[in-house]
Length: 503
Ligand code: DUC
Ligand code: ZN
Ligand code: ZN
Image: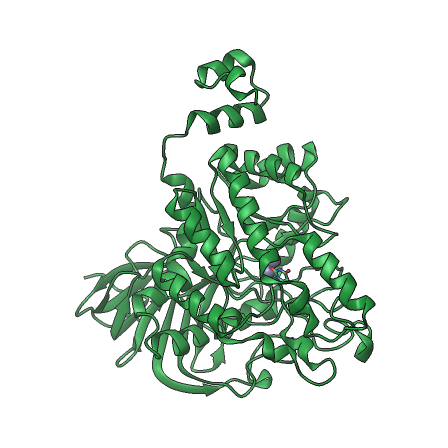
């Protein structure tokens, strides 16, 4: 019988479909057996009374990245990956962000070097694309996609990052050709700009006006617009950080009509409301994110959308801005809602909150938790089958959860460098007590053991939405061809002629 380097025995293993009693045998960085009655390995973990789950994958977090406003987050690849690991996450996929005028290739190369030097867990990254010139799209982006960076984010808002509809069409056509997943920050820039300007002119500067300016219809309008644009090429899009009912309804309706649209939400939209921003002074800035927190009805709709499959992933959108002049408050107490860095920390708390509020409160099953925290991320972003399930052949990325362990969340008890948590004093039930990354036990009952740079870059393959080949309509073949500058004869072979397209 095979000698294992590591075994996890007597626990309940869960996949995205089932929960079953099994032991897990690991050799090197891989899972080599999942079966009952395995002998103890060189190291043996007793998982009696515990859940043995795939390590979480966080496909939306901001690490060592400058925001559109130019504000640097407090976490680097080391602190972010340590915090992620403590919270049961064994792979992160943050963003290499292109700011205007910068070379996408240079941005990606610089970011790769930072990650390689510091991450303690496996990683990849997406790109943020803010330029749509030929070099960016046809050269640099294509090169990155081919080396395994198969997703990128674009913004429909923020003057410094946003692309317009014309640019969006270039991006979507490129994504269709290269089979890369476009992640969209969908909010209508002009609605936000107009409302913000009027609020500021009338002296309404407090944090709570952030929510007023990012009104829900700005989100649903942009969500609808990018879905419609994606239909020109029949290309998948994923709407990140969905916060409100209208946007959800738009996504659900488009899915029912056959559009390839996917969605993500985050714990803060499920658990906090905009009331948190209405605190004395600028305290509410801690809860300022975009899109903003909404209300209890939105929360209910989001929980339902996770159950119904309208949304596929729950990510942290960890945005590590400190509550001081380096982050949230560039002008101290005089900072207006328009000047505050957008976003809140959440890498370490993402899974404990989802487990406690989701599984333990009966809002989702354990397999649903596994899907939303790991398996769906792996599939959507081309990391499956290597990661996202406790299964033979997969990387040994595993979190052993004690479903009854209680923790009161405090900033000082967490491992990021943000200095505050939006969940200060919140009690969660259920915690990942042992965390294994590629066969290494890196968190063991509060003790951490991994060196900076020990995480590995994971090249990603084609995202799942592109693997479900489906026949393209004549129209989308025509417009895909048009994007490539195909001749009118070629168009005719697509079965959709120039004449048909004249109106
Ligand atoms: N979008 C994000 O994805 N994160 C933080 C702020 C934002 O606008
Ligand atoms: Zn965003
Ligand atoms: Zn984000």
